[in-house]
Image (cartoon, rainbow, N blue to C red; front, side, top):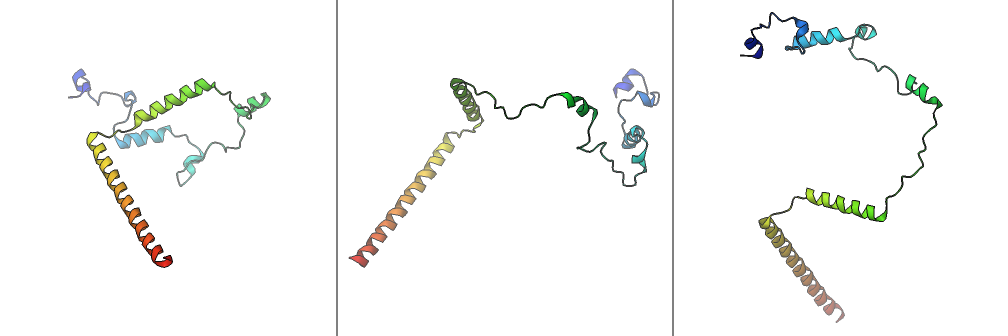
Length: 142
């Protein structure tokens, strides 16, 4: 049961002007068509509309601003004091650290184990290559 049924009104009794939004797609199309201005845009076969004015055209607003001075662009904004900049830096760092997704204990143990195993492997690899090169150099020059 809708609100209009509860109030005792039927939808047929309501005037179409009283509805704020059309319910059906056909009613929306009809409403859009009735709000379009008549003129050249209706005569176009492809249905596309043109912009009202080009970007380079002058408007009334631009004509009114003609008597005013052009704002200076080469001025640099004043720098804040050293302490204010340091305080701002700390605030921004703190804000970025709040965005970090910190690992839990299990993830941290896993990541640490992976890093340690990789470091041990790389040390063994470099040590093995070093020993092998030492033997080759000893045979060649030795």
